[in-house]
Image (cartoon, rainbow, N blue to C red; front, side):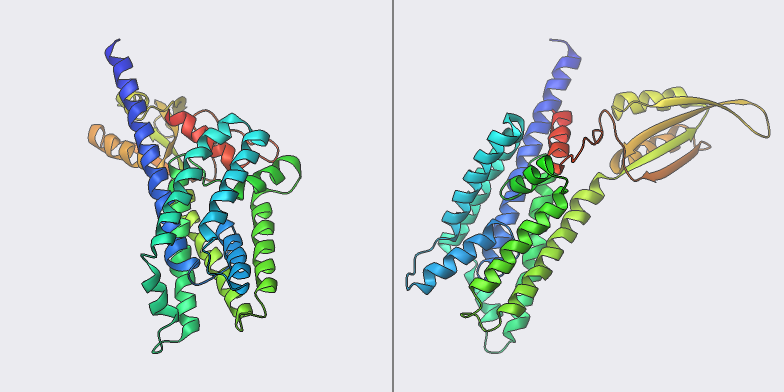
Length: 334
């Protein structure tokens, strides 16, 4: 085995461990948000946890103290995984399997031990504080943790599975986009919960609206952490040291680039223009390198709304889903 092959194997192994770590961390933070804030406060935000809250409500109303939220989570995660495996194929299932196990495991541990119940109790059962303000704080901080957990899981090339599988199937077989399908599913769950719990919770409408606020906070965190971190830039460089810069782009950044042949408008001298699409981190590294080899170089860094093609986001097929993009990203890392 030559040195380059060894380097590639080590790089692939590191990428695999990094992805596993990010998926594990993301699932832990996601479970923490549910166990610490959302479920104890009985906030309906959509998703599997809200279905568990509704089921738990009927169990409690029947006079039983049986704890069922984590069991509902396990059951629905497994069911959605099986549906995804059958309808979306082995590739999607492989990227969802680990998160579908580790998330409910983390959540079940926190839910059964009640490690964080005192936090929710101090917010909504404290006589010295306003209960609705406590619910609002649970919604905000729960949304932050859940959104952060989902985003970190995406960064690891994984998927949290769950009802996202249903949204993906809707996008695959109907004209409804995945984002709209997710909204419809979550809105249905929240509306069902409000109706089901209306008579037992005097402030159910307010709690439902607070749950919607939590969902918006969650979506905002995903936008900030995942979407913003995956933005790309188009870089154009004019430099007499372009061979060194090209070597750095290809060898260190492992990106392809294009050399355009131009001409100085004033001098009429021929110029070589390097054009390349890079991530934020790669653009920063390239800027530092260019300044070290040619401080007089001319460099333009422009944000790109999207970059399609090999090594980036694949060209969108009809009703392409976020899950397909995540899978493509993970394959690139491997």
